Each structure stands twice: as C-alpha cells, then as structure tokens.
Length: 332
Image (cartoon, rainbow, N blue to C red; front, side, top):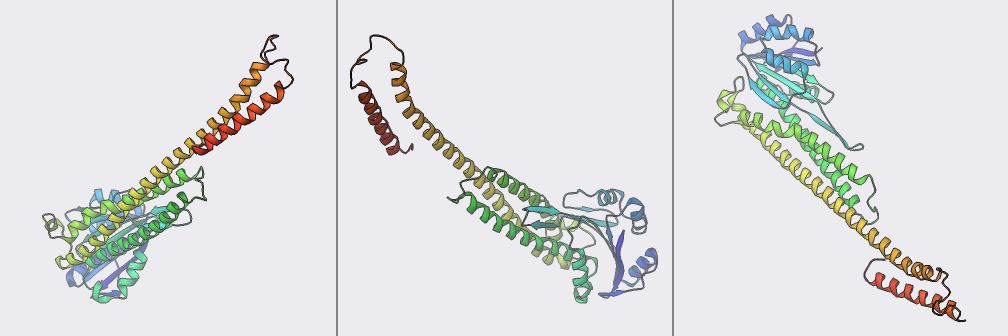
C-alpha cells in the first residue's frame, strides 16, 4: 500500500500532488521539484500504477515485490535501484531482525518500498522535511539520508552486540558458572545472529563504494549528484567501521566457542581421572575379598586368629596410600 506520497519543491513539501503522471511532468518541467512515494509491502496490482508512471524496470520491480534481496545497486535506463537491509537487535532474546528497503531513484522522483518492520524511512522523511536545505538537493538527498540512517543504526547494533558478547564471555569463563549444558548452544545461537547482521552489512560495501566515487565504476551511476559523493564516502567509512566490528565479533565468538569446548573437554578429563582413581581404590578391597571368598580349604592364614584384623588394617593402609598418591597428582 502507499504510505505517503508528496511533491517537494525547493526543499519544501507541497500538497498539490494530483495525478502521478501530471505531478511528475510538473516536477521535471520546473527542475526544482521531485516526487517521493513510499510504499509498504505492495502487491503487484498496487505497484502496477507506479511502475507504469515512472517506467521502472521489470527486473527491479520483481525484486521490490518479492523482497529477500541482498544489499545491491543496479543501474537501469530510467532509474537507479538500491537495496538496503535495516536491522534491529533485541538484547533480551539476543535476536537480530532485518527488514528491506528498496529505493528507486530517477529523474525528479524517488520511490521507496519497505518490507518488514525494521525501517528508518519515517524518521528520515520527518528529518528531511525539517531540513529544507538538504532536501533541496532532490532525490540524491533522499538516497543519502536513507543510507546514512541505515548505517548509523548498524553502529548502534554492533555496539549492543559487543556489550552482550562481553557478558557472555564473562559467563563462560566465570569460575562460578561451571559451564552449563546450554552454554555451547547459546554461543552458537549468538554466532548465528552475528552472521545475520553480517549478511546485511558486508554486501552493502560495493554499492556505497560506487556511490562515493571516485573510481572506474563511479561514472556509471546516474541520477546521483556528483557533489554528494563526499557524503556517501562518509557513510561508506562508517560502514567499513561496522564491518570491522562484525569481523571482530565473529572471530571472538568463534574463539569463545572453541575455548568453551576445550574447557568442557578438560573438565571431562578431570572427571574421568576422578572416576578412574576411585575405581582403582575400590579394586584393592574387591580383589582381596574376592580371593578370600573362594572357600578353598588350604589358604594362607585362613585359621589364624588375627587374620581378619590384619587384612582389614592392610586394606585401610593401602587405601590411604592410594588416596594420598592420587591426591598429590591432582586426580582427586
């Protein structure tokens, strides 16, 4: 459905929208205005009119309708198509959720398509409408503002993930925790959330590099003002910081998981040593009792008066010596 549709003239919103084709013609004739249409999970029928009026490419329209796209930038004859993936992080459940924002930029128009609940579009539109000086730069300003808001929120999510990872690391290596059975699954689940975050940030590097220029691919990006390149370059720098943080988080999670598994292996070895030590101590009286329980008539000291206390005393001494030996070697 269409969430919002407006004409912006000289950086200010006007209400004389009228028919889409007439509005677009007026904007192109004046040269100082553009149309910005925002849609939320449109159906094919709802998007058909927009497709026809703005001559959007069928392949880009298909991507915008189906969603589930990687961040990318594609250039068509009459428009520029950019896909971004805003993300949000819920610390209580350690869950990263992502949405999708598709941006069509063309001659005097911007069309934004939102999928999912995570989106900076409402905030971006409100912020731009309160800043006519920026909005006066047209569709380029809208694309920059959306990319900037998306990447800035990446920084916040990366910080929150880092904080929660520190808590998880402290829990794993805490002597009091003892390493619960669910620790490994929690670490692995956290790693999956980092990977979800990574799928949103890493592919965006190439599109922002093309928008920021200069470079061999910068010239093939139409409908974007060259004066905006330094601003896109700043967004790209922020994204590089985010990607460095994501790489660091991914490595640290892997190291924590490996350390936890090694810790559990050492703990299991300690348990096995303790079990083996106790089994060895139990084997001595079992062996002696087994020998004297064979009921032979001719056995050493069988009819001696002090046989029983001597055997019991010998077993106690042997058990004590074994206990001291295992204790000294750290088996008990």
